[in-house]
Image (tube, rainbow, N blue to C red):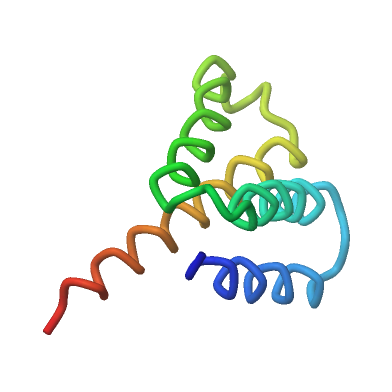
Length: 94
């Protein structure tokens, strides 16, 4: 899938940062998304659905209840969704 390099780039950026719960949650989301994208039978739409499904539960949390790990986890999936959107829009440009 064409998004695997983008996910790997994001993982490399996170690995270059200092640790902590925020980076750990972000990294966990990226690893899960990469695993999902690596399956030969999965499409970009499958990856989008996986990310959206992973984010569904966070709507129930108040911001004050969201710890740094969960915030990083949410931000990681949002970053993958952003990469999907970027890939789709660049595909349609002439």
